[in-house]
Length: 280
Image (cartoon, rainbow, N blue to C red; front, side, top):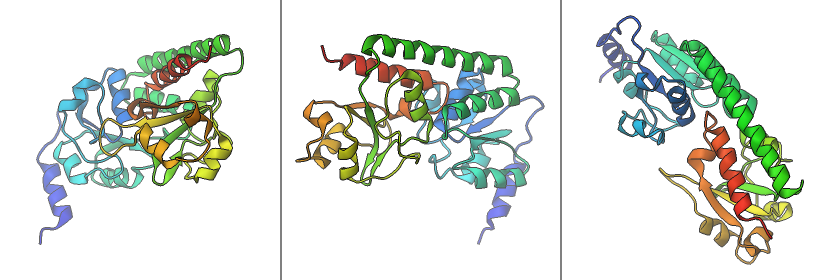
């Protein structure tokens, strides 16, 4: 039987990186997007199965899923740095450090402030601090602009949203995550904002009690996903306002759930959508 750590040691021995050469493996799509936004796209040598943007990542090697990246695949790419999240990758990053591979652990999902801190931390680690600061400032400015736009066009009464992550079990975006922070910044009510969990599982009665003006179904471009029809079928016979108004819409999960440089784009998608559905 082959000993796993012997295999790992042999993989490590295959390559000693030249001084100054970066080979970065990203363990989350938002991290990948951040690296490219900071001008480090050329250093990225591995991404997850769920990375779809920017277009350059489509030809890069894959190291596995977001929740279950493969240590062996990572090592085969001979990285000088592996970047992951504290929520999902702490144990894997610890093992990589034991193997003398540099790692960076970021916190992304708890709030909008964490996204900014993560971008700045990544920028400092890669000598791109000024670019990271400019990126954070640009995001902040754009969110303020979108907030003013919502206030002007809806007179202080924008529609409430419920963001649906999954239908079996029924999972929604609650009030303790960066998506709720984005909605708050642009002045759009999160119908589930009073639920103090990141992505809580709820029953249909809870959704009926929330009774949002618009339901946003997050549809992924890769892997398993849900459609607006799935949500409507789940609530067949239940008098939900959004269904009665024809206000169950799909938005790209690849934009909504990537807490990185694209948060302003997520906000813009939401604002454009509610403007299009604005009642005369």
